Image (cartoon, rainbow, N blue to C red; front, side):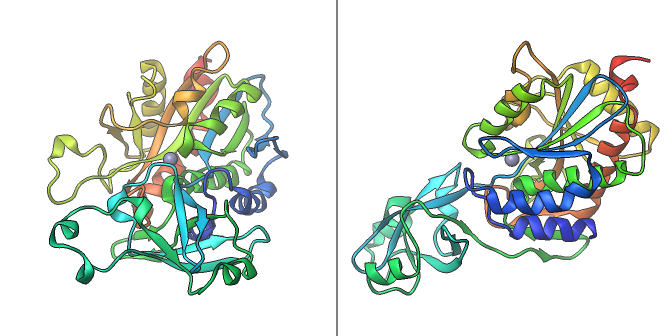
Length: 352
Ligand SMILES: [Zn+2]
């Protein structure tokens, strides 16, 4: 399967934080041929382990979960109310299609409705609509009809835009945060399958990043890595109305190396090692401007007695919306960098 097809399959899957099962099983099937062991823990982290010849362990982290919602109330007229899981910008929520995933895995389509402007007072029209006043219309006309479809309180749902290709090698989908990172891990495992590796590599597909880095924390505790790299997206903001110094990363400049975000200040020694690997392999890179956002590396580096950790990310635009967008060449260069970095270990970081 081509890289872009992996991203398509993962982005179109539903994996709201705490409900990652479907995405986890897709990832398991894709990565299993390239590793020596695969296992899942009690809370739903998936570890795909490639055994190396050395004693050290590298944790490569990407989170499986995406922001979404859960059904929180079903009213007598058959409308659903919903609660957010993860950080949504309320301004962009109304007026979209959603897919609801029932307990037996059935998908139902609905739309997020609000009272139309024609019947609102002039003042109300100018205000953003609070999420409590939005509702989902699935076409049902009673609570019993909703129940007959198998939809219950607690079922997850996402705003669902299928993966699609734009101009200029750009693609868009609903969940590049962080299925772009998951794609990097799967493709890195595939490419490394043809090489010897000299550290154990734990490809860690973790749950629950969007609700507080939950999976990364429990994963790092178990793995006790000597080194960890979180593979994430970063905030592409080359767009109208944003000054250059406020654009954390740009499209077309390759993977972004984090120096400091709100969750970690990365060791200069580790940054220099990643830069050297990129330069030796002629891989372009950029820095993610400090100090926007936070990632799993924030939780990982504070695990046990502390873990040397960094972040490499794929530039994406419009994250935490259903229209995340990236350039496939940036994704490819991130895979190249991650693969070259593993090849250069342990010497690149721990000396010869
Ligand atoms: Zn993320």
